[in-house]
Length: 367
Length: 167
Figure 1: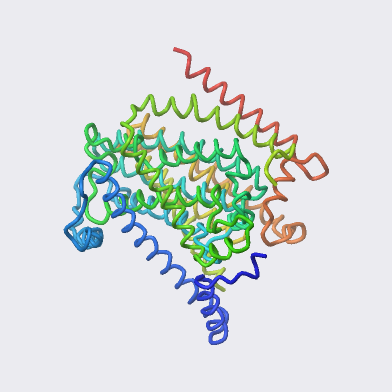
Figure 2: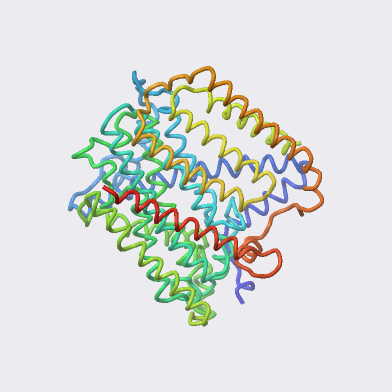
């Protein structure tokens, strides 16, 4: 039924058209090369543009939570404020610091941004819009995102500054603990869907009652909440931002960085927020699938909205939730933070995984 | 062609960073070079389109073991201080041990590299196949070793807790 419905505004028409043109006019390696370059450019620019949108959105939403106006001078409602900020950070001087381990100091931001970029490539943004599609996609996402913490640790140590060091240690402890919860929550869904391939996971969730969060009902909802909490903690934001608690540690592990090097950390932090939201969208909320309830007319109308719009809508909704949490709860202490993970979330997660296995084995999920 | 270029680039990174990891005087730099070696090894697995092993390499070694290494170096050692050279006798001894290891590994690889082409089917191995192989009880399935290794890890965790609790 879905196949007959036309998808007028989908981007895969464009990519297919480009593909055929390249195949006809170039030898195979040339076509591949052009495609690689195009995909790389598209991903990098999407990375930058999404970061700009997120920074603007965060500042505006934060302002509304705090009963302020937020940016409102540059452009109508301040919409080009973050473009101006970007130009400013691009032309800022990178201050070279004495008495740091030069190699590690300058290498550290790249670890953070490369890990974030690698994860970004694996996200299915829409129908036919996925760059990296491994058979073990979820495992890939979990694996490459764990590299970023090395960048944070090295940055903290190489800065030769006690504040940075303490910030990096806190961040490391936090990331390593919450990564466990995030991975276990995703594993719960892998048990339900029976695959680790992100595109297959999306393809399975065609109708609303097939979305993993509905299909796996109670254990899936628990896993969703746990994933949001642990993902939020992994990005060092919200009530979990004690690696850069400004009242205690100036700015944590990136105190000594300036200019674009600081920009890398900043960019990666924002994009990690988006990446967590989009993985949650892909895995729990049907990814780029539009809301389909099985009634033909309604489904048809929903299909006219292109899939990437659905994807970004869902992802930005989850980002909004994360901002809401960030500006609502006070910051935790480090012992409270680790207690929350090791004494509550991890046991809940493990029990939840077993519950999900029982649900799948006895077929209690919604078919 | 392109695969060969990528292979030589990765091999060069592995070789150079391995040497740097043992010759550098700062222990934390040594850990970073080791990290580059592990990541490039994952790249070679990807080149063989053995995705699962590449992911395990990144998740376990780069994301897990190296983070623990760096963490423990930061916590225990004085990471900024240059490491002292060993006594010459020990240096010769460790050099001999390294050469012996290299010879042994080289010998085994040289005599078995042909067999790989006979027994291994190239191309991507499906995740479900690996899952069944790890969790099955039939022939060529490895539930018992898997469980034995998990038991070993559990014993290690309990042992670590016991040592940590001793005041």
